[in-house]
Length: 178
Image (tube, rainbow, N blue to C red; front, side, top):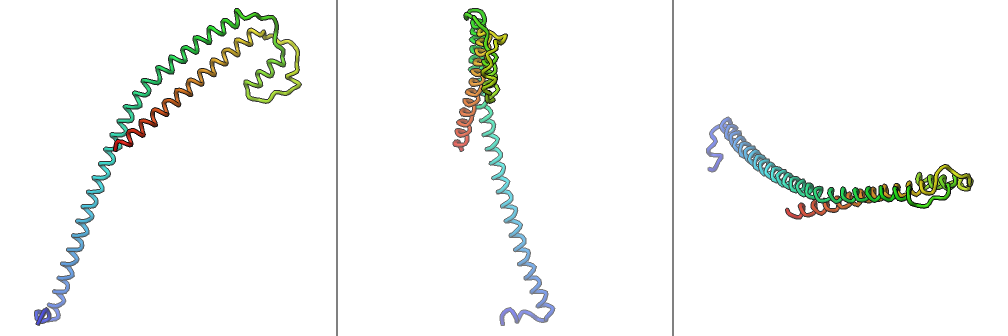
């Protein structure tokens, strides 16, 4: 007696088997769909949370960046203005007060220009003793001006390095505040 006694004909048996397969299929499809929808919602929640966190960190970094710039730019400008002022005074002194008794040789100018350009000087050109039209005071003024330009470049690099250090510290701080 059991399940087989309930089956009265082969058609009824096929209908019952198909019904059972249909019910099991519906349960499997429903379970899959429910799991998919639940996982999808959880993934969307994780993505939204990540996006909000990233946006918050970005806003925080932008605020810190503005504070860094507000601090470093005036320092840089003040230092550059001082270098410019000192340059003007020193060039004026070199041109007007340093005793100047002779013209530099063409060889001296050649080696100086080679050093400025970063090229190797040729000994035959460096040995040229012909007096040039440039006095020692004029050359000193140019050298003084060049040093001031180097100091400005150094300050620019120092300012950039300070900005990078401060910004990296800010990034580290923001990322530690998870």
